[in-house]
Amino acid sequence: MNNNENEMEQKDNSAPLRSRRTVLKILAGAPLFITFGLVASPLMRFLKPTMKPENFFQEPDLPTADRPPLFNISEFPDAFFWLPFSFPMKYLVFNPEQHEIRQIPGLLVKLQTNEVVAYSRICPKQRSHILSYLDVRPMLPGCGCADKSCLGACIGYAKGPVLLCPHGCGIFDVSDNGRVLKGSTRPPRQFAVDRSVDWITITGLKEPVIV
Image (cartoon, rainbow, N blue to C red; front, top):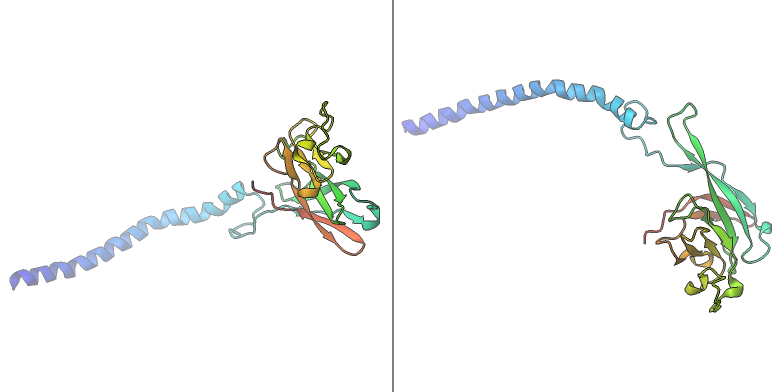
């Protein structure tokens, strides 16, 4: 009986000790939590200058369109008629204006199906290169050109005109969602197009195609 009573007493005494240890640990760690709380916001603002003070759940600074390009459908009289454009992309940055406008070169093409598609002219393989528009329809399909005057586009049997990197980094089928015919491992970025009865608006870049 005495042994049981001793064990019970030890258990009763150990509970307050554990409670005191817990309280002491909390008190010892409190300065660290306070210090972290004081430096967290300035540190986050240093890492992300556009973040407002103590706004940890601020939405990500995704780029947006600034004055999207607008076209009239009458500007595209025939199939595969195309027009270049420059898309202004607005990025939030840490400067007096709180933003920066970057121009993305693109082109808008009317397909045989009367659909209008827009592509970025930035080469997906070498971003410093600008893609050119080339109508290879007279050469396709199976052109059999011994001098390779079609620049290899006939190999992929393009359905229409192509986008061509002048430095040989890629050839892409305009009529087939920018399908890669040669070179690059992924197609060029496409723009989202909003078409009404008479007007065409380039609203922004689509998500990149993952190959």
